Structure formats: C-alpha cells, structure tokens
Amino acid sequence: MNRLTKNAVLAVACWTLAAMPGLLATPAVAADNAPYKVAEGNKVDAQTLSGWKTWRAMACERCHGAAQEGMVGPSLVNSLRVLSKEEFKTAVLKGRIEKGMPNFDTSKMVSENIDNLYAYLKGRSDGAIEPGRLQEIGK
Ligand code: HEC
Image (cartoon, rainbow, N blue to C red; front, side, top):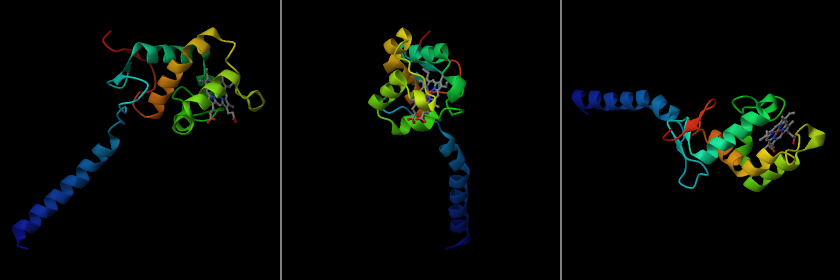
C-alpha cells in the first residue's frame, strides 16, 4: 500500500469513527405500525395527545417519574418494551393494589383513553416521543 492510499484509508476510518456517536445518538424512528404519529419529537397526532393529557391529569408521574423512567413505580420506558398492549391495559385498569399500583378503571378519562395512553407511552418507550410538553401535529 503506498503512502497516499494508506492516508486515504486512515481518513475514511477516522471519519467513520467520528460520525458514529452522531449515528448512535439519532433518536429512534417510529415503526410503520406504531400506534402513534410523531414529528420533531414533540408533535403528535390528536389521539396520542389525549394519551399524554390523560397521563398528566392522572399524575402518573408521581410514581413513574415525569420522564416515565421510574420512581416508586417502575420505569415505563422499560415496561412498554416488554408488556403486551393487553397486559398494559390490565395493569392500568385493574391496578396491582397490593404492590402500590392503583386501579384506574373507575376513571372515565382513563377508560376512554386507554389506547391513547398506550400509544403515548409506547412512543416514549420507543424513544420517538420526547419527555415533556406535547402539541398536536399541524397546530
Ligand atoms: C401511587 C403510585 C402510582 C401511580 C399514581 C401510578 N402507578 Fe403505575 N405502578 C406503580 C407501582 C408501584 C407499580 C409496580 C407494581 C408491581 O410491582 O407489579 C406500577 C406498575 C405499573 C405498570 C406495570 C409495569 C410493569 O412493568 O408491569 C404500568 C403499565 C403502570 N404502572 C402505568 C401507570 C399509569 C399509566 C399510571 C397513571 C394513569 C400509573 N401507573 C399511576 C405505582 C403507581
């Protein structure tokens, strides 16, 4: 390998390494079959927005943290990678009273928005939706 080629190879290797943290830091993109739509990390479809509003109204963050990463209750960012949608619904609606998770089936808002709540938390868990305030896409 002559010196010029060697330098060129080195340059490409360095560029690749330098670009890697950027590639790794790229937020996860919502899958085609995701239950939510998101743009720019904090704009979501109307249903997902209702899910977030329900989350806020019920103050789930008291126990699960404002960024859903866990406090008294477990990290829902992790939980939603594992729980099926049905398991999620059962956990939220029926609760696990003896373990400190209240039941929310007496709340009209939660019962009506359980799919939206799931969509919102799934988006948080996928890393596609940012923590904090959201607004509706196109508004
Ligand atoms: C008073 C505290 C508290 C509040 C408020 C609360 N949770 Fe929980 N939650 C917990 C605890 C504690 C657990 C863990 C129960 C266990 O050990 O199985 C839990 C478990 C869960 C689970 C199951 C997690 C898993 O990995 O199995 C989900 C989903 C969940 N909570 C969602 C919510 C949502 C959504 C809200 C708001 C509507 C909410 N929680 C409000 C305390 C709370």
